Image 1 (tube, rainbow, N blue to C red):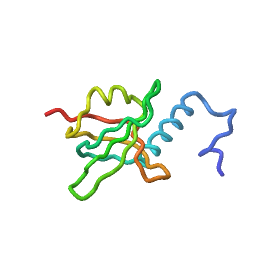
Image 2: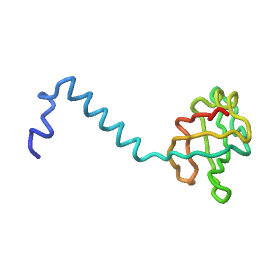
Image 3: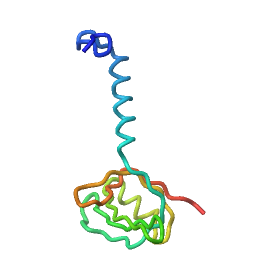
Image 4: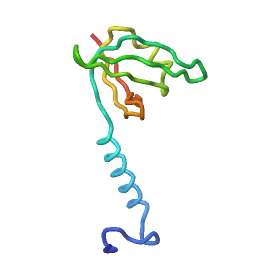
Length: 108
């Protein structure tokens, strides 16, 4: 590979590291899933310091997605009730559930 595209470690500057990190975050965002729908069936699976919460997101009348949230789960319980419209961003796990990393509650 040409050294102009991928310089050696000694040639990397702080600015180059920042550019590489920003590009990595952009590609990670492209691999995620973003969905908008209404919340149904909120259930607490594990009650620990940070609880594990499962809920069903109804995107269309026919399409339902099972979702898990651990990060900011206490805020999620406080803000969201069944029937609320939310937008979620996350990734699918091995069981084809969406692990939510970010969410936004749509205010009416």
